[in-house]
Length: 579
Image (cartoon, rainbow, N blue to C red):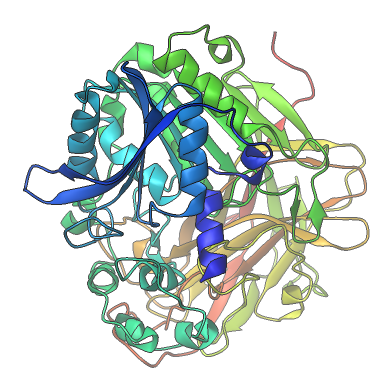
């Protein structure tokens, strides 16, 4: 339980660096469990920290499902109050001291709007509100951003997932089964202790539909998610990325290269800078991505990789500059800087860009090659810039009872990192394709994609792709990965089962990275059909997802030939900078 609370303190934007010193002394007023009425009569609880003076101040609002009374929020509230802000931290509906029933995402738009309107009209408010927070707290901002509330003036959306059917809890038809541990942790009014459970055992339970019972619960949201594996009206009602294009506020988008919901940050930034309804809003977006996990700016090290002394920044100062500029109308120096600031791994330094992805990026195809035995680290799979000729395909057996492991802790807090995948690559159901060592540095910075031509003996199956940086000593560092469920290869809205043995084309989105691949390093691609427990195990039957208990073994065939040139697309950024 203590570990869970500490994690959510971190992902709420309260990086440890923010607490290095105490806030300056100041007379403050504190109000706890203030009931804020919603349009349907439900009252939500908020704690308020403000300067103790008869004056009006800008407001910073956080809406959280992670107990607004934790020590981290109190520290943050006092800090912002000392800077001349009113800090409001509210329990979302059904959590903490708030009334109502918690159902993920269902009420965040309306409740967020009503809370903004209440805060904007209080005697201590100057009518200018900013919102901040990470993960679900980023979602609470995203859902209200495009609703046109007149008091909302700025956002800092950190580690914000995209629409829920695109990444968490569902990604191209595959379920993020660690989501069940998150649902269990927030299944009561306060954070629930799930440390008593063997999560590895829970995740192996079939059918998926009643996996919640292994955690001693019946969770309506989990069962609803399983009932809706495709993009339908259920998910449309829980989506925000189309509506956010209506926003009129500046947004600072923050994430990490090893944030498992990174794609929400990159997609939102790209969508708003290219497609916001108001062209002026396109200029008000800023992007900041560091070498971090889901808990941004928490450590310079992830697993065995240390990203160096520049990895941690004074994120608190960045946040203050953002809010001072938009809510206090001080000089907004951050708007005079480059719109994009990202950490270049490998070189371990920050770089600035005019846009994301960088306009000068070249998308280079590395083609799969082999003599029909790319199985495992010891096979003959290679990557080159040359298109394949007539080459035999690679085959492996995918057994749902023995899925390929994804290296991660079992709960929802951090899904993977820059881990060494050599132990996993010893398996014959993992195809491994590796380039020759680079003779000069290659800067790969941007979206990662895989085009795969493959066939299966099954009516449905999964295809996974993982892109890695192989160090001279053999360390195979995961950069990012992706998955696609075959029945959703053509559309997320309508299922198309496979014709066994027929070759199909798959686009596997592996999100993004930014790394300097140094001389002596190699690029590697893994292809397989499972990544457990990051994703649920496809049983290969083509039956109803989440309702079956038994699967079948599938023979998988990956093609790399002139007709079917499977390849990975790498975003290569030239050394020169645009002037």
